[in-house]
Length: 126
Image (spheres, rainbow, N blue to C red):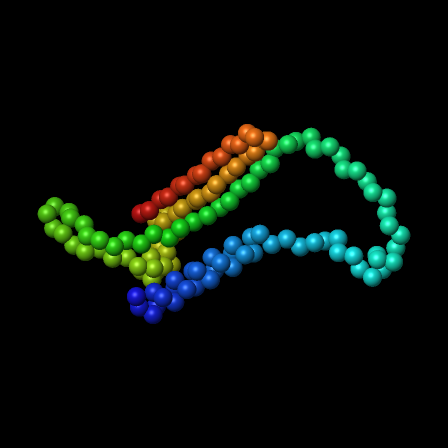
């Protein structure tokens, strides 16, 4: 593995880790301040009943493929090897919607014990 391949793999891995860590982050918007702490406590309000018990979740994802092996066309065999750097160069030089495009995602709908899901993969390679 060359240094350039290692660098690209490291950048991809760090980007993936940062994306996963940031996707599940939540911030509390009702943190008490000093002024609110001195205020009188408010009456407890009971929440309204849930009318729609359905829950939905969607998760987009992606993966990178590499190609290594040999191919035979009309009796001629040749070795094929496409690494991360060659794949990244192809992505940078091509028109993405025309030559290389992928949409992947997982969708889930739940209602109690009932669950429906779809795992959709669309890939166009030119």
